[in-house]
Amino acid sequence: MFITGILVACQTYLENFTAVVPEHHCRLQNQTNVEAPFLGDGRDSDLLKVSIPMDKHGKPETCLRFTELQWQLLNPNATEQTRLVTEDCLDGWVYDKSELSSSIVTEWDLVCGQKSLKSITRTIYVGGFQIGSVAWGILSDRFGRRTVLRWASLLAIIAGTCTAFMPTFAAYATTRFLTGAALSGIYHTRNCLTLEWTPTERRILVNTCNSYAFTFGHMILAGWAYLVRDWRRLQFSISGSFGIVLLFSLALPESACWLITHNKLDAAVKTLQKVAWINGHKEQGRKLTLEGVMSYIQEDLASVTPKSILRNLFQNPGICKITLCIGLAWFAAGFSFYGLILDLQKFGFSIYLVQVLFALIDFPTRFLAAVIMSHCGNRLTFIFCAVFSGCMIITDIFVPRDMAALRLTISVLGKGGIGLLLLCLHLFTLELYPTEVRQKGMSVGGLASSFGAMLAPLVFIIASYSHIVQPLLFGGVPILSAIAVSFLIETHGLPLLQTIQETEKRMKRAQCLKGNAKKDIQERPALLMPEMPQAESTV
Image (tube, helix red, strand yellow):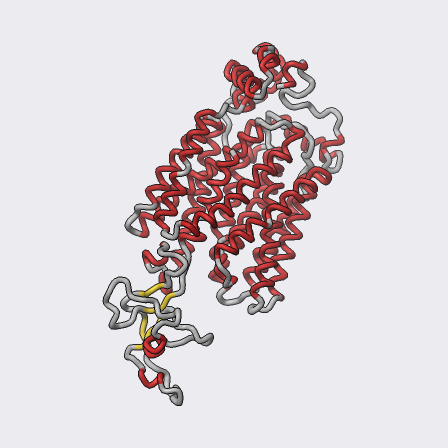
């Protein structure tokens, strides 16, 4: 599962490098060869000066050229009295390939009038992730976690590798949509399967270790992209690596919680015995019996709805409240996280360095998150992280534009807070929902997060008119989500529930106890907890 998280992170943030916009200027009128040289690096500066107008910073304009060569500009005593006639880049552009040999921007000239297409590709990818979250969530609750992980991995391999060979932008966007849909299935199923096999007392530790996979994914992607400078080769190599996930999924056991809630008790017992054998508890595994499991969860099986549908998340007041509040929290996390992580070029530093810095901040913050969650619980941790990250992002409004290092520091701290928030949110969501609809709940969260990520590129367009809009929105939305989460109950240290009815009872009891369900000493223990015979609880 750790390797799966690394590969998901690499694919998700791949366009930080495959969609890089290098320095560029119009192709000169006399440059008819395909590989025309880029002149913005100081080579042949006289030819550049008479061919391309300069902007207010003294750099070549990216979207204009002179209609005729202006040789008089080479005279140091010459002054520009009249506005020289310019035109659009009718013959295309030339790019600086000193950092990357190619990207989708250089491949299809996604600059000037077509620069919005770059943001559209990210929106399309996130749209695929969004639709996949719902589709895979329904399939996972119906056909099992392991089955969905296998099919999603296969789709990720096929769609991802095909992306590397697409000849047109439209075909590229189509395969990116399918890749996003596949990644959502891998991502959510991985989280759900991991939690359902993790004991209550180790959830925070496992969730923290799992989240570090994305941190390593950030860093590995930077090194991977540094070594592979061609976008097609980079896309192909990362997509092909998902064959590892497919092979792992063939050996993974199905979730015992899912098997039990779907009345597949024979398979559940065999799976538990297999896991006991893997964990070195062979004797305890042999003592597990079908009768023992049936007697323990008979009440649960009677209350499980025969067909789990998405409407179940809104039919009951307790589950509906969880869905609405958690949905807003996921929206805020996706909106702000993608707004920060997918705009690395704005700082003016090497994108490889910025990518690594954004990854390194996760090491201290996620360790801090585990400590805070262990002592303060999930709800208070989320509120603290949301307010902290929101305030850090809003601080960027008051920093001068020329102080790039300070702006980068503030953004790194804000990203660290959002990453910490996401770590808490994953565990909080999985603990709030019962097994019966847990994957659907995660899918709705992923849907809300993806919707926020889809809106993030629109903020970049608005920010071109006012620089305060971007930090104000990316910082303000997490603070609003903190208010919504304050209405939820605390779940830290509580066992996972199996049915909607149990969750509704917990929500009602928590209301009477002012949001703290842990005070209820009548809380029913989770499956295979100490209330069972010693041989079974050991597994």
